[in-house]
Length: 212
Image 1 (cartoon, one colour):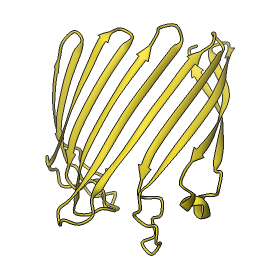
Image 2 (spheres, helix red, strand yellow; image 1 turned 180 degrees about the vertical axis):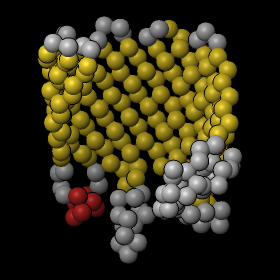
Image 3 (cartoon, one colour; image 1 turned 30 degrees about the vertical axis):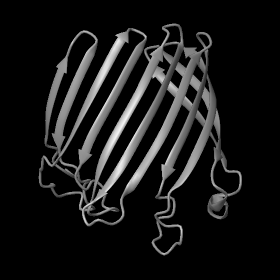
Image 4 (cartoon, one colour; image 1 turned 90 degrees about the horizontal axis):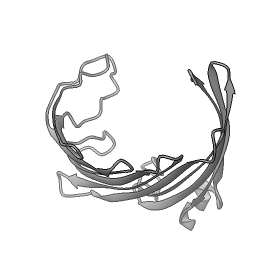
């Protein structure tokens, strides 16, 4: 047992809407994984979801979290997210999202706001073939964890563009999917020395679904 999770939950819902609230312990568990963390309801969050039609879902959430990260002691966080999801029921689905994390220092120093944007889409061309894509734009201040590095704690905005393909192959009682994706990144020139001038990456995967 690494920690004891204690939370208070509340949910209200109607035909096309839902509101959820929770209170919980905000701090992440420490490195002593076998002890039980002291339960505290020192943080809270609320989320509202609207489904105006079967094809659309829209949500927004907000939370105030008490000192969640050990790397940023003495800093509370206010987090906000919102997203819109679409599914046409014929093999195409898409999502767009925004998030913001505001650090609130207890000692009057540090802090700052970090934001991120996300968009992704998935298109089942037919029963066997799927194309998918993803775009991310993130402000990150943890790219240089070494405190002695002159770029430590500096905020950089990085973008990622990803495109992928998957092929589904029925094999009797199971379905095998084979695919891959490639990604390129856009970033400030000040990151070239550590991350390269034109960083990119790729992924290959195989997935087995039972009961296809």
